[in-house]
Image (cartoon, rainbow, N blue to C red):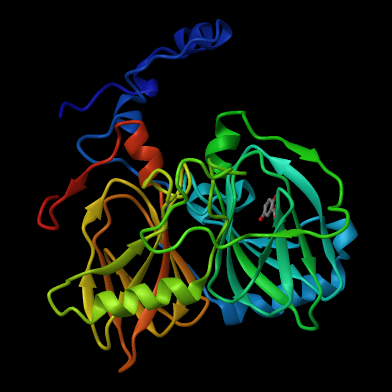
Length: 346
Ligand code: GTQ
């Protein structure tokens, strides 16, 4: 491609005259906004080690009372997007949230979609539109856009979870805001188990929440599915996707959620995809190679990779490894931006 003229090639007075009228020449920036063939992601390959961050999170529990934090979160920020912008990728926000016994993170609802992936501790729960979602390690809990939610803790140890939100995208769209709510009074309703494997209620069932029929996806079920898929040796990639059982589509609109199991010592080369991706280790020891960068991850570590990266996941143990995955594919597919490339393509 032809090299184009730069700002410096123009007379200074001319550039100033443009600036004064709030106009800019396209050609000096054209190759940045439309780079040839492959995007130039700001997203860097980063790993956040849980054992390094946990003491800092516990310190936040001593330094800042929940009333002064509302949400006591250390954000996993990607320096490629500048730390203060609180982006893991251009679309995804990640945070580790701490709730101490007896604490309550007050009710609110907001336009960004959120999910929680539970990292440690027992006895906490999130109420989503009044429904009580117990938090156990590895569970995925949805709090979709516009749904009231508050976090409570009746147990006796620290509870930590990973928040995944589409906040960077919604904020960029100038669509991000929150409303304050009221504490759930009296009994919470518990979520009835009305969806099973291949089972949805028939049409005449009164659905409370047809748009998001499942709010809590227990880890035990996900793990069981992965293990039984893995027992079939013909399957190359042992992965399940969290879906909405009423539509068969992704569980949420913007970010996609799935889980991968690596068999003992398995090496898995992922397809190159047009969206960034996040990995969070639920169980095991996994080497994540992203282009030239290698991270060795263990339980509760998190990492991210930019679009079109060459990604290889290697299980270093003689036992299976389990990885929670979040990616931007639902968003990209809806906008017609999604594609895959061969590993041999540039
Ligand atoms: O728990 O509702 O990490 O509103 C960021 C914003 C968590 C939450 C975050 C939030 C929440």
